[in-house]
Amino acid sequence: MPPAFVELLQFLFSGITSGAIYALVALGFALIYNASHVINFAQGEFVMLGGMITWLLLSHGIDLPLAIAGAVAATVVVGLALEKLAIEPVRDANVVTLIIITIGAGIFLRGLTSVTLGKDLHAVPAFSGNEPLELLGATIMPQSLWILGVTAAVVLALHLFFHFTILGKAILATSHNRLAARLMGVNVNFVLLLSFGLSALLGAVAGILIAPITATHFEVGIMLGLKGFAAAILGGLGSGLGAIVGGLLLGLIESLGAGYISSDYKDAMAFVVILGVLFLMPQGLFGKRGTERV
Amino acid sequence: MADIRPSGYSKHRKKQTYTRRLGTRATPMQVLMSERIGGMGALIVIIAALPLLLANNYQYDVAITIGINAIVVVGLNLLIGYAGQISLGHAGFFALGAYASAILTARYGLHGALAMPLGALGVGLLAYIIARPILRLSGHYLAMATLGVGVIINIVISREAWLTGGPDGMYVPPLEVWGVELYGGPIWYWIVAAFLVLAVWISLNIIDSPVGRALRGLHGAEVAAEVAGVDTTRYKVMVFVISAVMASVAGSLAAHFSEFVTPEKASFFHSILFVTMVVFGGMASTFGAVVGAAVLTLLPQLLADFASYEHMILGLIMMAVMIFMPRGLVPTLTGLARRRGARR
Image 1 (cartoon, rainbow over the protein chains, first blue to last red):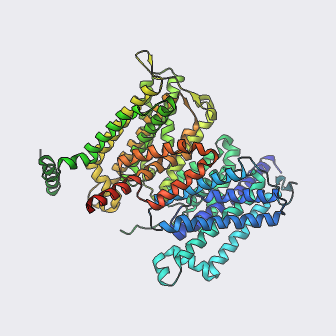
Image 2 (cartoon, rainbow over the protein chains, first blue to last red):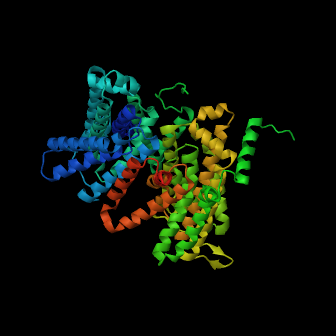
Image 3 (tube, rainbow over the protein chains, first blue to last red):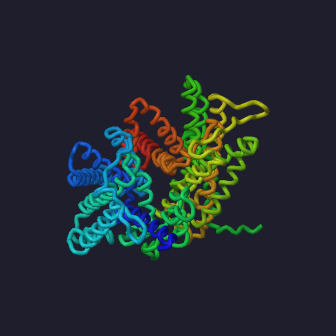
């Protein structure tokens, strides 16, 4: 294999790995946005909680699978509580108010975590060892395969959920037209609750998957949350396919940009591309185009 | 010159000035209660009286920080509260102003009083250039774009260490006027107070001008305003630039006052803090903006006693205020007071 090709492949691997994580976070944004038109700025905190709680349970001698299940369950409870206590009481408030509530929730969760679990960086062991695998001359970590596999499984499960279950269809119906869904007997408050629970689940899964690679920390959710939001916007807010494509694109742009242009500006790449896309396509790649009714 | 305004428009204006001048409606009490005269007077009285309560340098520091934040928030309130456009990137403009002052004075030996307007001019130009494509977006897309601008500014400042000192920040020489170094709480208190009063005065005048009416129309129903002949893009761009320039000037003041700048000033969290101050105090209320800046600057200081619980409590208070007073502190409280008064 020519070295240039191996190098490219290496960048692609790492790009798709982080892209899959961004896609999971972006899906969380899209889910809540569809059900409520709220951008949940505490989404990054779900990611952080997933990683931190896994570490906590592991450090108490609990097995990895059980620790993962516990972390996911705990994060889902946090997501449900957030909806019940802070979002439902102000359902019809304007967008900025809701954004600030979720930001406040994010600050609260970060504060709570730093008080109870400390401000140190914690390592979580990889699911199946650290022996790198070789593929066409480039190397890939087993954890990356876990990330890709679990993300694919989650996306498939979500697809089945939305198209083949009554509950999933109720969420879709609510996102299309809240009032009409309600008139058809959909319990929209329950849908809202469910979407926060599902988003928390997606966030926690993303956080647990990435924790062995980046280690986990009480502030790890800030940048991941922003990148996930960027991915959701890149794909077009509210589009599930858009969130996935946006996430993968963002990961690839970052890793190729860092590899070929400047690693100093890795974090900036995503945002430069987002601005470019928004200037040309104000609705993102797969967003709903159309005229605004007055 | 022919008056090209539609007749209804000028008639309406005349009527307004008539009632105002003759005071058929506005009693002296109402004039005192109005935002422009009464509010401005109250602000000046509070600013003038506050030093009597300030006992030490630390308290002066807090008061000055409140003033600097308030300048940004008054500008941002024009954009968010009146034009209805959100920005999650204003800390970027604040930091650009701060770094323009820092770099021009420390590295190029320019006078601080010259660096500040140059920085403001540069930020104004940048804001003008990006305003058109950015303000075409709306809602969450606009939030994303402004957030992106802020994050990019933050990253550039952190990375270009040769110019900005990188993540460690850089030293800023003190401001000097006629050979005298401006140093210490009391002097800076009055400098910042003067700028704050100026910012509030500009803001109130914009709100009370045809521009303000256009903005309110824009906020209420953008398409309707456009149909009625309001060049909505022009007004949005104008307010965006004004708010960016105010942030830049506040940044310059902050740089010279603290004599140190760090990329933290451009952080996403800092942008969020500014927006929260606007909403906290009450959108579309200039004095609400000042109150929001004061409360949210004071809060972390008061919570410092709770040490590590500080952020938890801050988050809880942010959520609680938004849940129980979604309109913000000042509109909710004045609404309450008015209802009380009506009952008596």
